[in-house]
Length: 434
Ligand code: ADP
Image (cartoon, rainbow, N blue to C red; front, side):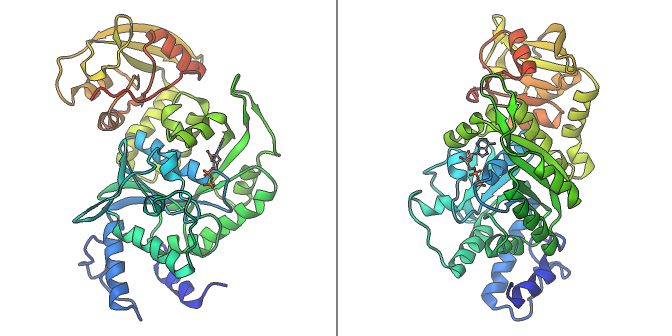
Protein backbone atom coordinates (compact mmCIF):
# COMPACT_ATOMS: atom_id res chain seq x y z
CA UNK A 1 0.00 0.00 0.00
CA UNK A 2 1.25 3.46 -0.83
CA UNK A 3 0.95 6.20 1.79
CA UNK A 4 -2.29 8.17 1.45
CA UNK A 5 -0.52 11.50 0.85
CA UNK A 6 1.37 10.05 -2.14
CA UNK A 7 -1.86 8.72 -3.66
CA UNK A 8 -3.44 12.13 -3.16
CA UNK A 9 -0.48 13.96 -4.66
CA UNK A 10 -0.55 11.63 -7.65
CA UNK A 11 -4.23 12.30 -8.20
CA UNK A 12 -3.57 16.04 -8.10
CA UNK A 13 -0.49 16.14 -10.32
CA UNK A 14 0.12 13.23 -12.65
CA UNK A 15 -1.04 13.79 -16.20
CA UNK A 16 -1.37 17.58 -15.86
CA UNK A 17 -0.41 19.62 -18.94
CA UNK A 18 3.03 21.26 -19.14
CA UNK A 19 3.50 24.36 -17.03
CA UNK A 20 4.83 27.80 -17.94
CA UNK A 21 8.54 28.58 -17.43
CA UNK A 22 8.20 31.01 -14.56
CA UNK A 23 4.99 30.05 -12.88
CA UNK A 24 3.78 33.58 -13.65
CA UNK A 25 0.68 32.34 -15.44
CA UNK A 26 -2.03 32.15 -12.78
CA UNK A 27 -3.34 28.88 -14.22
CA UNK A 28 0.09 27.33 -14.08
CA UNK A 29 0.40 24.59 -11.47
CA UNK A 30 3.76 26.07 -10.41
CA UNK A 31 2.11 29.40 -9.52
CA UNK A 32 0.00 28.05 -6.69
CA UNK A 33 1.17 26.64 -3.43
CA UNK A 34 -0.32 23.24 -2.68
CA UNK A 35 -2.13 22.64 0.54
CA UNK A 36 0.37 21.90 3.32
CA UNK A 37 3.40 22.67 1.11
CA UNK A 38 6.33 24.27 2.99
CA UNK A 39 8.21 27.32 1.62
CA UNK A 40 11.11 25.06 0.67
CA UNK A 41 8.93 22.44 -1.03
CA UNK A 42 7.06 25.15 -2.95
CA UNK A 43 10.32 26.77 -4.12
CA UNK A 44 11.72 23.34 -5.10
CA UNK A 45 8.62 22.49 -7.08
CA UNK A 46 8.69 25.81 -8.90
CA UNK A 47 12.37 25.29 -9.77
CA UNK A 48 11.63 21.77 -11.01
CA UNK A 49 8.61 22.73 -13.08
CA UNK A 50 10.36 25.71 -14.67
CA UNK A 51 13.11 23.36 -15.90
CA UNK A 52 10.83 20.56 -17.03
CA UNK A 53 8.46 22.75 -18.99
CA UNK A 54 11.30 23.63 -21.40
CA UNK A 55 11.40 19.97 -22.38
CA UNK A 56 8.92 19.13 -25.08
CA UNK A 57 8.54 15.38 -24.53
CA UNK A 58 9.42 13.37 -21.44
CA UNK A 59 9.60 9.60 -21.83
CA UNK A 60 10.39 7.17 -19.05
CA UNK A 61 11.88 3.73 -19.71
CA UNK A 62 10.64 1.14 -17.22
CA UNK A 63 11.11 -2.56 -16.57
CA UNK A 64 9.55 -4.96 -14.09
CA UNK A 65 13.00 -5.99 -12.88
CA UNK A 66 16.70 -5.27 -13.34
CA UNK A 67 19.00 -6.82 -15.95
CA UNK A 68 16.51 -6.99 -18.82
CA UNK A 69 18.25 -4.27 -20.85
CA UNK A 70 16.30 -1.21 -19.73
CA UNK A 71 19.39 1.04 -19.78
CA UNK A 72 20.51 -0.40 -23.12
CA UNK A 73 17.10 0.41 -24.61
CA UNK A 74 17.10 3.90 -23.01
CA UNK A 75 20.55 4.71 -24.50
CA UNK A 76 19.60 3.49 -27.96
CA UNK A 77 16.24 5.26 -27.99
CA UNK A 78 17.96 8.51 -26.99
CA UNK A 79 20.70 8.16 -29.63
CA UNK A 80 18.19 7.13 -32.33
CA UNK A 81 16.10 10.24 -31.56
CA UNK A 82 19.27 12.34 -31.75
CA UNK A 83 20.14 10.76 -35.11
CA UNK A 84 16.65 11.75 -36.29
CA UNK A 85 17.68 15.37 -35.72
CA UNK A 86 16.09 15.96 -32.31
CA UNK A 87 17.56 17.74 -29.29
CA UNK A 88 17.75 14.99 -26.70
CA UNK A 89 18.67 14.57 -23.04
CA UNK A 90 19.25 11.24 -21.29
CA UNK A 91 18.71 11.13 -17.54
CA UNK A 92 19.98 8.08 -15.65
CA UNK A 93 18.19 7.93 -12.39
CA UNK A 94 18.64 4.19 -11.76
CA UNK A 95 19.72 4.49 -8.17
CA UNK A 96 20.83 0.83 -7.87
CA UNK A 97 23.31 0.78 -10.70
CA UNK A 98 23.63 3.88 -12.83
CA UNK A 99 25.18 2.32 -15.95
CA UNK A 100 24.71 5.10 -18.49
CA UNK A 101 28.19 6.67 -17.96
CA UNK A 102 29.77 3.33 -18.99
CA UNK A 103 27.37 2.78 -21.88
CA UNK A 104 28.02 6.30 -23.22
CA UNK A 105 31.80 6.19 -22.69
CA UNK A 106 31.57 8.93 -20.06
CA UNK A 107 33.12 7.22 -17.03
CA UNK A 108 35.04 9.72 -14.92
CA UNK A 109 33.37 12.74 -16.56
CA UNK A 110 33.52 15.79 -14.30
CA UNK A 111 30.33 17.71 -13.68
CA UNK A 112 30.37 21.47 -14.25
CA UNK A 113 28.20 23.93 -12.40
CA UNK A 114 27.05 27.13 -14.05
CA UNK A 115 24.95 30.06 -12.85
CA UNK A 116 21.95 28.22 -14.29
CA UNK A 117 22.65 24.92 -12.51
CA UNK A 118 24.37 21.64 -13.10
CA UNK A 119 25.43 21.17 -16.74
CA UNK A 120 24.65 17.84 -18.42
CA UNK A 121 27.63 16.15 -20.09
CA UNK A 122 27.64 16.49 -23.89
CA UNK A 123 28.20 13.08 -25.56
CA UNK A 124 28.42 13.89 -29.29
CA UNK A 125 25.32 16.04 -29.03
CA UNK A 126 23.38 13.92 -26.52
CA UNK A 127 22.98 15.70 -23.17
CA UNK A 128 23.60 13.18 -20.41
CA UNK A 129 23.10 13.34 -16.65
CA UNK A 130 23.53 10.38 -14.35
CA UNK A 131 23.52 9.69 -10.65
CA UNK A 132 26.72 7.81 -11.52
CA UNK A 133 28.54 11.13 -12.14
CA UNK A 134 27.82 12.07 -8.54
CA UNK A 135 28.87 8.79 -6.97
CA UNK A 136 32.44 9.00 -8.25
CA UNK A 137 33.84 5.55 -7.52
CA UNK A 138 31.86 3.00 -9.56
CA UNK A 139 32.64 0.27 -7.01
CA UNK A 140 31.29 2.28 -4.10
CA UNK A 141 28.25 0.58 -2.55
CA UNK A 142 25.22 2.84 -2.45
CA UNK A 143 23.38 2.48 0.80
CA UNK A 144 20.74 5.13 0.73
CA UNK A 145 17.74 5.17 2.96
CA UNK A 146 14.34 6.00 1.50
CA UNK A 147 14.37 9.79 2.11
CA UNK A 148 17.96 10.10 0.83
CA UNK A 149 17.02 8.31 -2.39
CA UNK A 150 14.05 10.58 -2.93
CA UNK A 151 16.24 13.62 -2.15
CA UNK A 152 18.87 12.56 -4.73
CA UNK A 153 16.23 11.93 -7.40
CA UNK A 154 14.56 15.26 -6.67
CA UNK A 155 17.86 17.12 -6.71
CA UNK A 156 18.85 15.67 -10.06
CA UNK A 157 15.52 16.66 -11.58
CA UNK A 158 15.59 20.14 -10.04
CA UNK A 159 19.22 21.17 -10.49
CA UNK A 160 20.14 20.05 -14.00
CA UNK A 161 20.14 22.81 -16.58
CA UNK A 162 18.88 20.96 -19.69
CA UNK A 163 17.88 24.10 -21.57
CA UNK A 164 15.40 23.50 -24.40
CA UNK A 165 15.02 19.88 -25.44
CA UNK A 166 12.74 18.02 -27.81
CA UNK A 167 12.99 14.81 -25.76
CA UNK A 168 14.17 13.76 -22.33
CA UNK A 169 14.59 9.99 -22.03
CA UNK A 170 14.61 8.86 -18.41
CA UNK A 171 16.21 5.59 -17.36
CA UNK A 172 14.15 4.83 -14.28
CA UNK A 173 14.97 2.51 -11.38
CA UNK A 174 13.55 -0.98 -12.12
CA UNK A 175 10.37 -2.44 -10.63
CA UNK A 176 7.10 -0.89 -9.61
CA UNK A 177 8.03 0.28 -6.11
CA UNK A 178 8.58 3.64 -4.49
CA UNK A 179 11.60 4.63 -6.60
CA UNK A 180 10.02 4.56 -10.08
CA UNK A 181 6.90 5.92 -8.40
CA UNK A 182 8.85 8.96 -7.13
CA UNK A 183 10.33 9.56 -10.59
CA UNK A 184 6.90 9.53 -12.25
CA UNK A 185 5.40 11.54 -9.43
CA UNK A 186 8.07 14.26 -9.44
CA UNK A 187 8.11 14.69 -13.20
CA UNK A 188 4.34 14.80 -13.18
CA UNK A 189 3.45 15.28 -16.83
CA UNK A 190 5.19 12.39 -18.53
CA UNK A 191 4.32 11.86 -22.19
CA UNK A 192 4.60 8.14 -21.83
CA UNK A 193 6.50 5.04 -20.83
CA UNK A 194 8.38 2.43 -22.81
CA UNK A 195 8.28 -0.91 -20.95
CA UNK A 196 11.20 -3.27 -21.51
CA UNK A 197 10.86 -7.01 -20.96
CA UNK A 198 12.47 -10.30 -21.95
CA UNK A 199 10.75 -13.27 -23.63
CA UNK A 200 10.81 -15.79 -20.74
CA UNK A 201 7.51 -16.78 -19.19
CA UNK A 202 8.71 -15.59 -15.76
CA UNK A 203 9.04 -12.04 -17.11
CA UNK A 204 5.34 -11.95 -18.06
CA UNK A 205 4.17 -11.16 -14.54
CA UNK A 206 6.61 -8.24 -14.28
CA UNK A 207 5.61 -6.65 -17.55
CA UNK A 208 1.93 -6.83 -16.62
CA UNK A 209 2.77 -5.15 -13.32
CA UNK A 210 4.65 -2.36 -15.12
CA UNK A 211 1.70 -1.72 -17.45
CA UNK A 212 -0.71 -1.66 -14.49
CA UNK A 213 1.67 0.69 -12.65
CA UNK A 214 1.56 3.13 -15.58
CA UNK A 215 -2.22 2.90 -15.75
CA UNK A 216 -2.56 3.66 -12.04
CA UNK A 217 -0.42 6.75 -12.50
CA UNK A 218 -2.14 7.90 -15.68
CA UNK A 219 1.12 7.58 -17.67
CA UNK A 220 0.37 6.49 -21.27
CA UNK A 221 2.14 3.26 -22.23
CA UNK A 222 3.89 4.04 -25.52
CA UNK A 223 4.64 0.37 -25.94
CA UNK A 224 6.50 -2.78 -24.96
CA UNK A 225 9.98 -3.70 -26.19
CA UNK A 226 11.01 -7.35 -25.99
CA UNK A 227 14.77 -7.45 -25.46
CA UNK A 228 17.08 -10.49 -25.71
CA UNK A 229 14.48 -11.97 -28.02
CA UNK A 230 16.45 -14.82 -29.60
CA UNK A 231 20.18 -15.01 -30.16
CA UNK A 232 21.72 -13.36 -33.22
CA UNK A 233 24.55 -15.49 -34.61
CA UNK A 234 27.63 -13.22 -34.84
CA UNK A 235 28.73 -15.03 -38.04
CA UNK A 236 25.57 -15.29 -40.17
CA UNK A 237 23.08 -13.11 -38.28
CA UNK A 238 20.51 -15.95 -38.03
CA UNK A 239 18.27 -15.62 -34.95
CA UNK A 240 17.91 -18.72 -32.74
CA UNK A 241 15.09 -18.65 -30.20
CA UNK A 242 16.34 -19.61 -26.76
CA UNK A 243 13.31 -18.85 -24.62
CA UNK A 244 9.70 -19.22 -25.70
CA UNK A 245 9.54 -16.02 -27.67
CA UNK A 246 6.70 -13.65 -28.44
CA UNK A 247 5.63 -13.18 -24.80
CA UNK A 248 6.09 -9.42 -24.96
CA UNK A 249 3.95 -9.16 -28.10
CA UNK A 250 1.21 -11.35 -26.62
CA UNK A 251 1.03 -9.42 -23.38
CA UNK A 252 1.02 -6.09 -25.25
CA UNK A 253 -1.91 -7.36 -27.30
CA UNK A 254 -3.70 -8.80 -24.22
CA UNK A 255 -3.34 -5.55 -22.35
CA UNK A 256 -4.18 -3.33 -25.29
CA UNK A 257 -0.85 -1.49 -25.57
CA UNK A 258 1.39 -1.17 -28.65
CA UNK A 259 4.25 -3.60 -29.26
CA UNK A 260 7.31 -1.63 -30.38
CA UNK A 261 9.73 -4.37 -31.45
CA UNK A 262 11.98 -7.31 -30.59
CA UNK A 263 15.71 -6.81 -30.05
CA UNK A 264 17.78 -10.01 -30.27
CA UNK A 265 20.55 -10.97 -27.88
CA UNK A 266 23.57 -9.84 -29.85
CA UNK A 267 27.22 -9.89 -28.79
CA UNK A 268 27.66 -6.54 -30.57
CA UNK A 269 25.04 -4.95 -28.26
CA UNK A 270 26.84 -6.21 -25.15
CA UNK A 271 30.19 -5.06 -26.57
CA UNK A 272 28.87 -1.59 -27.41
CA UNK A 273 27.46 -1.25 -23.88
CA UNK A 274 30.81 -2.18 -22.36
CA UNK A 275 32.88 -0.01 -24.70
CA UNK A 276 30.71 3.10 -24.44
CA UNK A 277 29.82 3.20 -28.15
CA UNK A 278 26.02 3.32 -28.56
CA UNK A 279 24.95 0.42 -30.78
CA UNK A 280 22.42 2.25 -32.94
CA UNK A 281 25.05 4.80 -33.98
CA UNK A 282 28.08 2.55 -34.36
CA UNK A 283 26.26 -0.38 -35.98
CA UNK A 284 23.81 1.80 -37.87
CA UNK A 285 23.63 -0.49 -40.89
CA UNK A 286 22.72 -3.64 -38.94
CA UNK A 287 19.18 -5.07 -38.98
CA UNK A 288 19.02 -4.64 -35.18
CA UNK A 289 19.74 -0.90 -35.51
CA UNK A 290 16.83 -0.77 -37.97
CA UNK A 291 14.62 -2.37 -35.26
CA UNK A 292 15.79 0.34 -32.85
CA UNK A 293 14.90 3.06 -35.36
CA UNK A 294 11.46 1.43 -35.78
CA UNK A 295 10.99 1.55 -31.99
CA UNK A 296 11.28 5.36 -31.99
CA UNK A 297 8.73 5.88 -34.78
CA UNK A 298 5.77 6.24 -32.40
CA UNK A 299 7.90 8.49 -30.19
CA UNK A 300 8.59 10.78 -33.15
CA UNK A 301 4.88 10.77 -33.87
CA UNK A 302 4.40 12.44 -30.47
CA UNK A 303 5.85 15.54 -32.09
CA UNK A 304 3.48 17.96 -33.78
CA UNK A 305 3.06 16.78 -37.39
CA UNK A 306 5.23 19.53 -38.91
CA UNK A 307 8.20 18.86 -36.65
CA UNK A 308 8.09 15.11 -37.24
CA UNK A 309 7.81 15.44 -40.99
CA UNK A 310 11.40 14.92 -42.12
CA UNK A 311 11.86 11.53 -40.38
CA UNK A 312 8.40 10.24 -41.23
CA UNK A 313 8.65 11.33 -44.83
CA UNK A 314 12.01 9.71 -45.05
CA UNK A 315 10.79 6.37 -43.77
CA UNK A 316 7.74 6.43 -46.04
CA UNK A 317 9.86 7.47 -49.00
CA UNK A 318 12.21 4.63 -48.31
CA UNK A 319 9.39 2.11 -48.34
CA UNK A 320 7.61 3.53 -51.36
CA UNK A 321 10.33 4.74 -53.64
CA UNK A 322 13.94 4.08 -54.41
CA UNK A 323 16.67 5.19 -52.11
CA UNK A 324 19.32 7.63 -53.21
CA UNK A 325 22.54 7.25 -51.26
CA UNK A 326 25.29 9.88 -51.31
CA UNK A 327 28.91 9.05 -50.58
CA UNK A 328 31.73 11.63 -50.58
CA UNK A 329 34.55 10.36 -52.83
CA UNK A 330 38.20 11.00 -53.49
CA UNK A 331 40.26 8.78 -55.85
CA UNK A 332 37.28 6.45 -56.27
CA UNK A 333 36.91 5.72 -52.54
CA UNK A 334 35.01 7.23 -49.60
CA UNK A 335 36.55 10.52 -48.46
CA UNK A 336 36.51 11.29 -44.73
CA UNK A 337 36.43 15.04 -45.46
CA UNK A 338 32.73 15.27 -46.10
CA UNK A 339 32.31 19.05 -45.95
CA UNK A 340 35.29 19.73 -48.20
CA UNK A 341 35.17 16.91 -50.68
CA UNK A 342 34.84 17.80 -54.37
CA UNK A 343 32.80 14.89 -55.66
CA UNK A 344 29.92 12.77 -54.43
CA UNK A 345 28.74 9.40 -55.67
CA UNK A 346 24.93 9.41 -55.97
CA UNK A 347 23.67 5.83 -56.02
CA UNK A 348 20.07 4.83 -56.75
CA UNK A 349 19.04 1.71 -54.92
CA UNK A 350 15.98 -0.53 -55.02
CA UNK A 351 15.56 -1.28 -51.29
CA UNK A 352 13.17 -4.18 -51.87
CA UNK A 353 15.42 -5.99 -54.34
CA UNK A 354 18.48 -4.79 -52.40
CA UNK A 355 20.36 -3.80 -55.52
CA UNK A 356 22.01 -0.79 -57.14
CA UNK A 357 20.02 0.58 -60.08
CA UNK A 358 22.15 3.50 -61.18
CA UNK A 359 25.28 5.37 -60.17
CA UNK A 360 26.14 9.01 -60.93
CA UNK A 361 28.86 11.34 -59.83
CA UNK A 362 28.10 14.88 -58.70
CA UNK A 363 30.52 17.79 -58.59
CA UNK A 364 30.16 19.47 -55.17
CA UNK A 365 28.71 23.01 -55.17
CA UNK A 366 30.90 25.94 -54.08
CA UNK A 367 31.67 25.68 -50.37
CA UNK A 368 29.04 27.66 -48.53
CA UNK A 369 27.94 27.02 -44.91
CA UNK A 370 24.55 25.29 -44.67
CA UNK A 371 24.19 24.77 -48.45
CA UNK A 372 24.90 21.02 -48.75
CA UNK A 373 21.78 19.60 -47.01
CA UNK A 374 19.46 21.61 -49.27
CA UNK A 375 21.56 20.96 -52.37
CA UNK A 376 21.65 17.18 -51.81
CA UNK A 377 17.94 17.03 -50.85
CA UNK A 378 17.11 18.81 -54.15
CA UNK A 379 18.94 16.02 -55.95
CA UNK A 380 16.73 13.42 -54.24
CA UNK A 381 19.26 12.13 -51.70
CA UNK A 382 17.74 10.46 -48.64
CA UNK A 383 20.80 8.83 -47.12
CA UNK A 384 24.50 9.63 -46.68
CA UNK A 385 27.18 7.09 -45.91
CA UNK A 386 30.16 8.96 -44.48
CA UNK A 387 33.36 8.45 -42.53
CA UNK A 388 32.36 11.03 -39.98
CA UNK A 389 30.25 14.09 -39.40
CA UNK A 390 29.57 16.54 -36.56
CA UNK A 391 26.29 16.24 -34.69
CA UNK A 392 25.04 19.62 -35.87
CA UNK A 393 25.59 18.75 -39.51
CA UNK A 394 23.78 15.41 -38.98
CA UNK A 395 20.83 17.30 -37.51
CA UNK A 396 20.77 19.66 -40.53
CA UNK A 397 20.66 16.70 -42.92
CA UNK A 398 17.93 15.05 -40.83
CA UNK A 399 15.89 18.25 -41.15
CA UNK A 400 16.10 17.77 -44.92
CA UNK A 401 14.99 14.12 -44.70
CA UNK A 402 18.51 12.72 -45.14
CA UNK A 403 19.63 9.99 -42.76
CA UNK A 404 23.38 9.84 -42.05
CA UNK A 405 25.27 6.60 -41.44
CA UNK A 406 28.69 7.41 -40.04
CA UNK A 407 31.94 5.57 -39.35
CA UNK A 408 32.14 3.88 -42.78
CA UNK A 409 35.59 2.80 -44.04
CA UNK A 410 37.46 4.26 -47.08
CA UNK A 411 36.01 1.77 -49.58
CA UNK A 412 34.51 2.17 -53.06
CA UNK A 413 30.92 3.51 -53.11
CA UNK A 414 29.58 0.27 -54.70
CA UNK A 415 31.15 -1.89 -51.98
CA UNK A 416 29.82 0.38 -49.25
CA UNK A 417 26.27 0.40 -50.62
CA UNK A 418 26.29 -3.36 -51.23
CA UNK A 419 27.49 -4.01 -47.65
CA UNK A 420 24.87 -1.60 -46.35
CA UNK A 421 22.16 -3.46 -48.26
CA UNK A 422 23.45 -6.81 -47.00
CA UNK A 423 23.44 -5.46 -43.42
CA UNK A 424 27.19 -6.06 -43.10
CA UNK A 425 28.54 -2.50 -43.29
CA UNK A 426 31.07 -2.22 -40.48
CA UNK A 427 30.84 1.20 -38.86
CA UNK A 428 33.84 2.38 -36.88
CA UNK A 429 34.42 5.66 -35.04
CA UNK A 430 32.86 8.89 -36.17
CA UNK A 431 35.90 10.29 -38.00
CA UNK A 432 34.67 13.86 -37.93
CA UNK A 433 36.92 16.28 -39.76
CA UNK A 434 35.61 19.36 -37.89
P1 ADP B 1 19.02 -3.06 -16.99
O1 ADP B 1 19.10 -1.59 -17.21
O2 ADP B 1 17.65 -3.63 -17.24
O3 ADP B 1 19.57 -3.51 -15.66
P2 ADP B 1 21.17 -3.24 -18.92
O4 ADP B 1 20.71 -2.40 -20.06
O5 ADP B 1 22.16 -2.62 -17.97
O6 ADP B 1 19.94 -3.79 -18.08
O7 ADP B 1 21.72 -4.59 -19.53
C1 ADP B 1 22.34 -5.59 -18.73
C2 ADP B 1 23.49 -6.21 -19.54
O8 ADP B 1 22.97 -6.91 -20.65
C3 ADP B 1 24.46 -5.18 -20.07
O9 ADP B 1 25.76 -5.72 -20.01
C4 ADP B 1 24.03 -5.01 -21.54
O10 ADP B 1 25.12 -4.66 -22.40
C5 ADP B 1 23.54 -6.41 -21.86
N1 ADP B 1 22.48 -6.41 -22.86
C6 ADP B 1 21.32 -5.74 -22.84
N2 ADP B 1 20.58 -6.02 -23.94
C7 ADP B 1 21.32 -6.88 -24.69
C8 ADP B 1 21.12 -7.53 -25.96
N3 ADP B 1 20.01 -7.37 -26.66
N4 ADP B 1 22.12 -8.34 -26.41
C9 ADP B 1 23.25 -8.53 -25.69
N5 ADP B 1 23.49 -7.94 -24.51
C10 ADP B 1 22.54 -7.13 -24.00
